[in-house]
Length: 221
Image 1 (cartoon, one colour):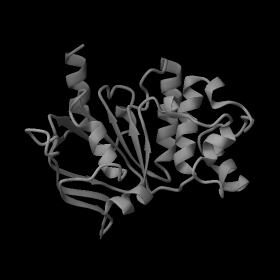
Image 2 (cartoon, one colour; image 1 turned 45 degrees about the horizontal axis):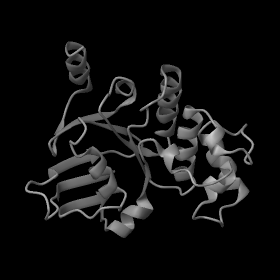
Image 3 (cartoon, helix red, strand yellow; image 1 turned 60 degrees about the horizontal axis):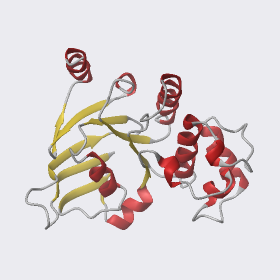
């Protein structure tokens, strides 16, 4: 279970804190959904949980263990928005092994199977894949590391409805083995598989009933 208590992120160059007293409980093997507009602090929160940015104050715990940035880098796997733009490997195999040359065939096969891409040849270029397949490869890159927590930033952005539906189905399957925290400005695709929901507005996180979020979205067309 992931616990955040009174988490604050306030860089000295900013007049106000970007994240203000964030409190969050996310049970293991559940999907948590944070909804907020651009600039609300969503991506910053994921970067802190991935150990890429340092919180100003507050506790982050996994089960009962308090976590440092080094711990968080081991615990979490972050899939950025439009992760395909960050691909560096000339083949799928190269992409999966970047930074982890010791990873064996069995781990690679398992990760590719988890994301439904076991049929793809590993010598294919990741840049030649469809958008949905590229998102799955980005997930496989993180799954190979065996993180406890998968962090996803706008995972359905830029995909057509069919690819979005397939990706949502995959995320629903993955929460059987992993804990997922997803941030998005548009929750419509993900509400049906979310176990916990929050809104993030100008750095202020509030728990919300997914049904109310759905009603609110409908009212705003």
